[in-house]
Image (tube, rainbow, N blue to C red; front, side):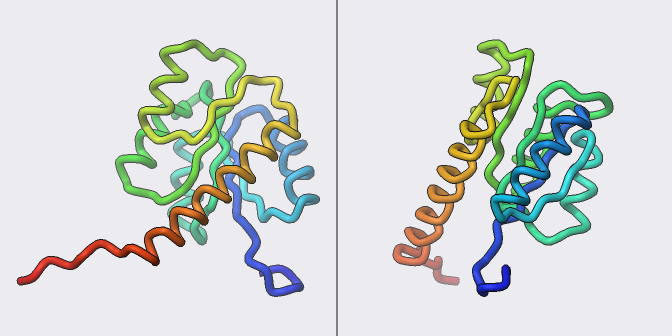
Length: 145
């Protein structure tokens, strides 16, 4: 929560490009987001395990130790409820389709234009909020024992 009592969205940035991470962290904090970072997918899974839930994950695809697609698959497999935006400088159609298949909300080419990223984050947060409201209005019926 911020000073006004408004829920602050938490974002995890996963990328091994230190300059980009610092830049995005600075810009996103300025726009009111709470930011955590990780240098690869393996480190990101540890951050996820040790902290409060994230609303958004921004992940690079090409990283050492655990790449972004493997990380995305693990997040999907673990049932972690979070919106994921994939970013890459080496995109191809197969990678794009695979990231969408495993639940990525959006796929953005590097160099990342901040306005494009911010628009994707806001759209993702809006869509997730709409889905939560829909679930509250129409809960799944419980099965009898």
